[in-house]
Every structure is written in C-alpha cells, then in structure tokens.
Length: 126
Image (cartoon, rainbow, N blue to C red; front, side):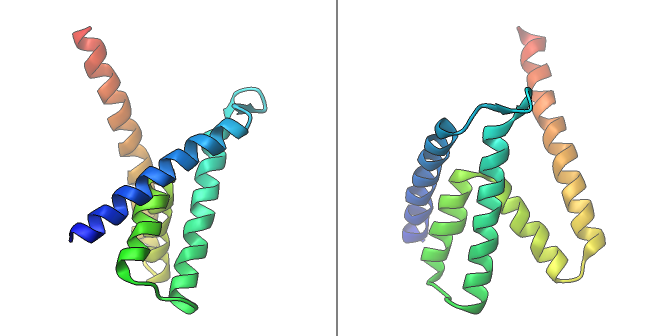
C-alpha cells in the first residue's frame, strides 16, 4: 500500500509540474476570452489517458503500481479531467449510455455548483 501511495505522490508531483510548464508555454487565451491553457491541458491529459487505457488493455499490462503512477498520479496531477474522461469511457464501454450521460451531467453541474457555493460561503463571511 505504501508503494502505491508513493507512486501516486511522485506521479502527481511530476504531473502538476508538467501542467505548469506546459501552461506557461501556451497563450493564456484564444479567441479573446477562451481560457486556452486549461482547455489544452485537459485535452492533452484526456488524449494521454485514452492512449494509456488502450495500451494497457491491448499491448502492455504494466504492474498495478506503475499503472497507478501514470494514471492516478501523473495524469491526475496533470489534469483530473482525464480521470473523469476515463470513468465516462468505462461506462460507455459497458454500454451504459444513460449512466454515462448522467455521470457527465452531474459531474459538470455539481462541480460548478460546489465551486460557486464555496465562493458564496467565503463572500458571506467576508
């Protein structure tokens, strides 16, 4: 268990540093107001998660610790959106389209509600 946590911690640190480095190399916005850096990071992370999911399934089954290092650790530190995409894809692969759609909708709605609720709570006490 300690090895898994260590793999996640190291992968997460490397992923977070990579996110910052790549975002610094990209323009902040695209088409005037669209936040391009996070959009690009999320797309890159999801692309990488898709690649790894299929590589692990068809070509190379790494140890669970190394798989966790790459997916939960590195890509989780790089972008949690990639983990969301993987969970969504697993539901789609199982033919559970209604559940996949519900998961996607609830994830976006409740994440944004949570974000704005946190902001409102702080503003209430400020």
